[in-house]
Image (cartoon, rainbow, N blue to C red; front, side, top):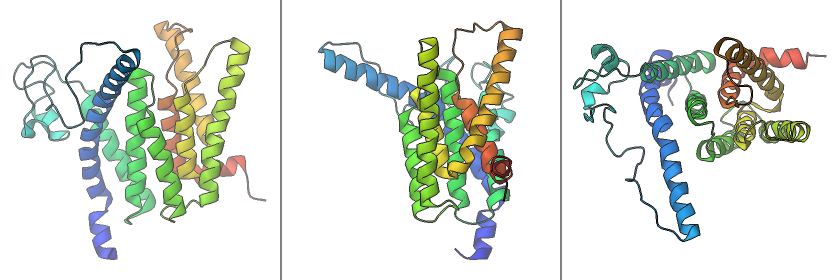
Length: 284
């Protein structure tokens, strides 16, 4: 790509606009992907058991068209412009004036800010789109886990392989050895924690999706980033868990999703990973 064209098309401002659009799509993914997977599991289980169940209407990421959950009003194109439509509608449905969740524009704005940060961090080069794809996937995974306590393989495994392939093709500044090592180290580190906790407490403390998410982060950032991601996510997760128990009387026996903290730790490591790695392995 011509350098001047790249600077124009991949500038932080253009990436911010792209982030708003991708964030709008992520809202659909976060809401519909768990429903799609739940329907698939239900049908597969019924088929294996040889029983008939009442099926629900098919749902994909594109159909049916988005509607207001309160009145069923079909969202028109000019009511679905990222961030802008929310402001024009003042956060209410145009048909029934039911409030629209603030989470929708928040995810759009968050994705736009992360895309802008990628543009500032990696510059106007085609590879910046790969990093934008990574942070978009992390946003989707974090909110899906927050909603369902589940990290779908449909996102974590392709994300891991995309990191390894990108490293193999030289698209990201991580060697293939470091990428594979990061995937292995990320998976096994939480795998050992999982089994140690189960031996000590007699129950599971996290899901296998957490292993795969950390493996994906290791594939993109290399094995040196794993300690920083684990430390950051564990520290923030512990603080939030203590705050929930103290201020909101959260039941200690009810698990708190770890995926959002892993995703957050991965984002911090993406932008400050080199400085954080020096804390763990200072230059000789």
